[in-house]
Length: 218
Image (cartoon, rainbow, N blue to C red; front, side, top):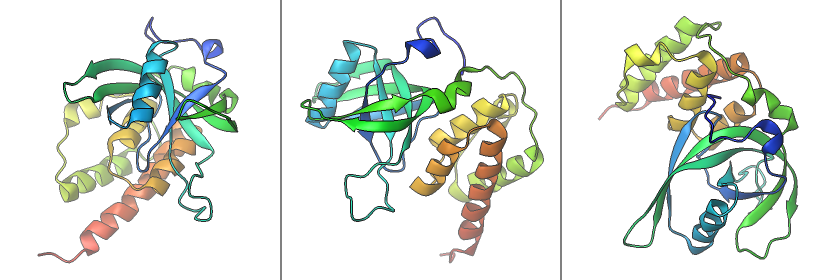
């Protein structure tokens, strides 16, 4: 994760964390996630965060637990509000910059309207380690699949800049911004090392590209 003087150190991460459950949306360490907040309880959550540590967590609902409609995946990522703007129609537009992943130790009772958890940051302490290398195994395969995926989805990218990004930041950014489904994003979120995430992203893109090429053309 790139260091800035505004970001907390690992031992300054909060012991309780509000969470924003949202399907198909994750934020990864060092990546930026734009959010449009309009529901009353989450407006309150953002207001409370701005008055304290400016942090909340993104956690996806767990679709595999159909008998528990409020169930969340165990792993999410905490982020810090780095841009904030109120709109005239009562919304908040913000950017959440990912800091560190966490496992939910327990969900806490809350009278705030939004959900609070006790995060276990320990398993992902390495999210605070800086990487300056852009070398990783299977790089050529990843770039090939990204090219196919961007073509199939008509997404544009700056290849010159993309190829200079260190491996962990590249995959973290792609995990945050690519239109992958919730299970694929969750698998990437839970992959501990940069190389694990590279391999997981390659597997996800292979599926996406195969489905895109197999879809009927109109």
